[in-house]
Length: 390
Ligand code: NZQ
Ligand code: ZN
Image (tube, rainbow, N blue to C red):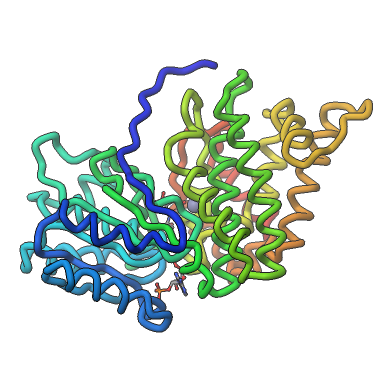
């Protein structure tokens, strides 16, 4: 294994149907005034909000509410949350919702005590908060599986006025202090969002798996996670109420992006960069944006990463080499991926998400380009990938 790394993940997880009971114990660790962030109504409809508020009140907490955190939270909403937190001098933040609410809560937590333009400082310039800056603690009660936000420092915000979506990965000070994961809560997630979450998980693994050629334990862990996800996703799309499948999907989501499987690796993340830009222009669910550009992207990357794609075919999709040439094997792996995506009902074109040929220049110009796993993309490559995904 190559590469040097530091592994530190301070998030404490409570998992399972009884996990909300642990919130009561956690309350002792935080101040009296809590900012309760939640989304646009699902937690009220399914009753989770009532359960959480009852526990907070029984624990003597003063609740300051911030409702309406939308999917793909906006910069405007971030400003609102920071203002509410400052005016009410909150001690800590509790996120109740999916990845959007968890991400958003970290963004508010980092920005409340930053004296300056936090958007510029953290998201545009990519800086970490200074070592002496106060950061509000964040706890999460997760209601949807996908992003891994419950155990990482990621925080993606959309500047809707400029159709620009960008993320910042904060250091471990912004990782949730605790996260409560009850798979039962994910049962009310609309089917489309469940499928978007499943592909988001898969693509997080890809972004860390498709890089480097050395022998690395992280890749073996990634392959195990992919196999579990493929298995459980097939059950969950047929029966979304299958607890075993939903619990495995939730657990896989956490491990797919909680800083473990990137250890000792360079990473890719260009499907995410294109997907974020596509999302800013179409407002389609995050996981769908990733799915819609993936086939064109990975066909291109395969040319530079052939041995890894051949390994993917064998170790993830059980395709037997049987004298096949490396390219044949690699292509069979991608074909298996495509068939799985079709089987669980994911979009394979950006057209299905409302994008068209005229939008390609704009989507390209707002895509952040990083040095990637096997292939350093140019804006022309991105245009081509988008065209092939129409
Ligand atoms: O607004 P509410 O009522 O909460 O409804 C949400 C939303 O409409 C609904 N939902 C969530 N839990 C539910 C439920 N509906 C019924 N029952 C439940 N139990 O589902 C919809 C989508 O929720 P959202 O939180 O937006 O989805 P997701 O978890 O996919 O989060 C997406 C955001 O996370 C970012 C994305 O870019 C996007 O902004 N990401 C964060 C990452 C990270 N922190 O590392 C990495 C990811 O790659 C991703 O970029
Ligand atoms: Zn993602």
